[in-house]
Amino acid sequence: MSRLAACLAVLALGACSSVPERYHGPVRVLSEEAVAGCVLLDEIETSSGLVGLLGPKGVDNNRQVLLSRAERMDGTHVVWGKPLVGDRSTSLSARVYRCPDAR
Image 1 (cartoon, helix red, strand yellow):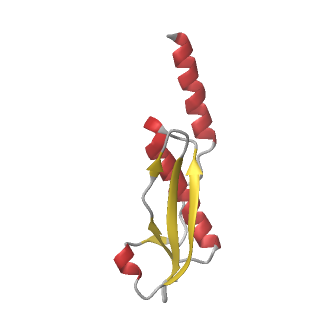
Image 2 (cartoon, helix red, strand yellow):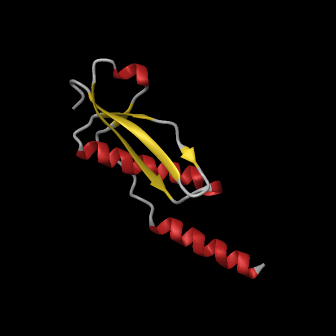
Image 3 (cartoon, one colour):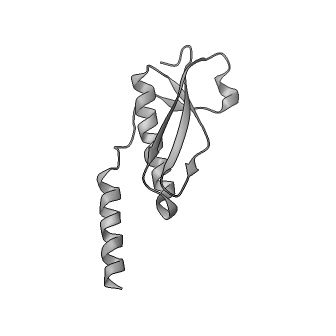
């Protein structure tokens, strides 16, 4: 049992070391219907090694990364794709928009 506990501790520490900071920038999340009148800049994607029970944390980490990337692209809003939690990675995509009068 102690080997299992040691393995879980190592996994938990590894997951914590790669956690991005919480995003506090200007990019906001909208629904697909709310982006009418906005310009689509690009669709971006990222993945995380957090899977299984840690999949939801992987999705949250991916959101933080994508929001930062959207801001660097001068986007104002994102619309999330469906998160995919697989056996080896957790991925998420976002469509990045620039909306008039958003900033």
